[in-house]
Length: 264
Image 1: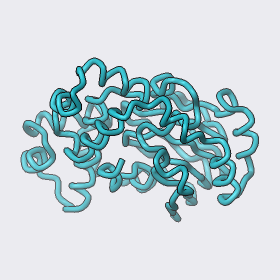
Image 2: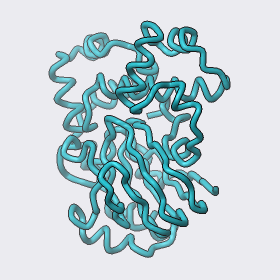
Image 3: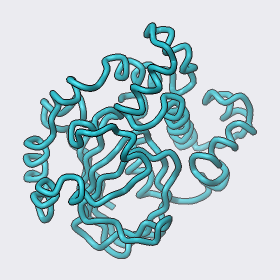
């Protein structure tokens, strides 16, 4: 399995976390865990099946925010090029409220026909050039409220544990106003992003320490107790922590961007 990340061109770095390529032989079913980001993915290998819908994923796919893990199964050789947006970055590509894409994996042709046509069959260098031409960073700065980015940074710094009400108070915002700005700019509620960031921190913590100790892990990662940890895994991942960490999912680990949850 060959996974590589590379930086976006400087004008896009405020809206793009990274660009990446992944090549691999056929692999088993994978569980893709929410990581608080939307992605644009170009598949140049064999099709990938979405096991939740039973359908094959499009060759050029726009993947909105996930609120719950999704299951996929490559049908053969994996050859992907992707763009991992920062939490508020999708609006640079699609001029619409981000919440319209939440939970959706759609063919880019329906949302941006010209861009999809230019991406099919392009090599990595050409994909970077095409995206740099089409993605509109000024649009994000025109529409995204500055407090959205500040709240995202606060959630990351607190590893998902800082209460949303506390963050809103820090920014002198009413919690409902912050909620509206997140639905528009990020696609999910600030509390949901907090839960996802905490989940990703937990996964990274367990993988880094090579140890899952229910009560100790819960305490270290900001859960009230072990039961709370288990409930969150079931809600966001669809399985218990024990089952998740007992299963190998190399593709999911690479695509999740676990190490980047503190750098939105």
